[in-house]
Image (cartoon, rainbow, N blue to C red; front, side, top):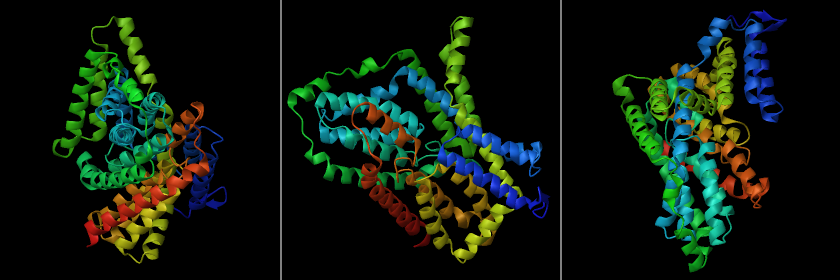
Length: 443
């Protein structure tokens, strides 16, 4: 729309900016449900005349929504088989229940799962196993829980489907699953190795337990975690096909959202195959009710309010400001984006931040030399936003979930106590990301 157009006596740019700022402030205070805030903001964008219903729907990225819904459905069915708990317990037994080895195994399993599941689901699966094992070993679960928070946020950075910011960026730029693996997984692995060395130095080598307590853990039967072996094989088959399709997507010319929805539909069919009509309907309804619809509607509203900024030219104006600030230097722009993203994501939800940054960065591409030249800046946005989640106890949903579980178990994680570990870890991970990107693209 014409930015000079007046709405309620103000410019369209001013009104759109005010709507977004108020929405983000309410999100920050957590006074209202985030989906409600986003949908109300989207509605005001339409009622004000900044957008029409047609242009509002144009702003929604349905590929992102399809990818989220499909993967949530697949994960919810897989979780019912018990496969994730099986892997965690199996890993603990592989290191003979050694407290030091346990630190490494639980972190590695958390990081790996987070690359394919959402971080909240990952910690909800791993934390109970952590409490169970540390209780039997009579050791402090605190370092394990802290490390699992860091591993979840870092591991989720490795793939397209590991963290919502990556899903947003991948869909906006039409990037493939393997694009993220090639560019980000080596950085994630490097950061995880350094993180594990840090925690092993400060905690792992000082942890001890008795042989009798180790024997108790070794008696845990990981196979008992599997609640349905037939379902397990069905889940593994569909997961293998979905991941293979993600890897081949750029050659198949199929969108990631389509792959995820197709995989979810096939697994739902296999999950309910052979059941009576009423049981089949109940099972389907149950699985679909487990999809995080709050997040889906939050994304939908968020896409619309950000599109309002884009349509009124606010994001293009901000993009021009960033270009002038860095004098068109790509390496300076990359460094600015990665650090700004990290510090902002440490204190506010990285999803609305990334959703706002994407169209702004797109508006900068022409001035900075095009998409290919801008790629290090896009990877910087992903790395900064994801790694920044480790900056504070409220930096990511997984952090808050683990803190709540620790509180209930009698091992509280304080905000300040967490900062003593989180700030160094965030600075280290972002510094490694900067160094890696700089060497890869500018040396």
